[in-house]
Image (cartoon, rainbow, N blue to C red; front, top):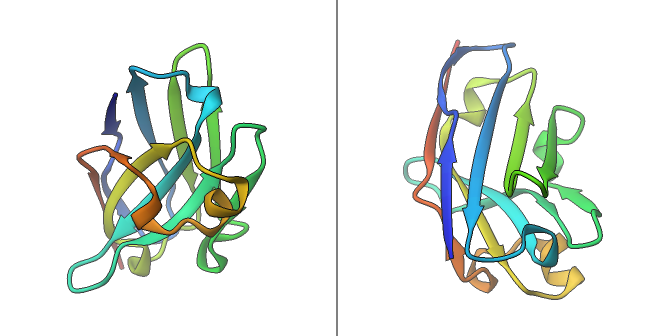
Length: 125
């Protein structure tokens, strides 16, 4: 199983960015997929998840601004981020595992067994 994130970068506040997670070694649609982020000095937090049936879940801070999606044909997970603020600055990671729907929606980091290396997103004010 391999997860590789791309698409991070520097963007001004109010701007948009899309990060991608290319997967291999498993069937994308059979697993819960999620995006996490970790800012310096802070715990890793769940941002958005998408379950095997396509149900999505978002942390309150990004609702209405971020959208998680997947392309099964390309084995790729996406996170479209709009109206970015400096508080969104963090390393963004994708994660995957075959877990229950409740665990998928809850986005607890410790239940995910597969992780990418992360991509840095920096939002300037």
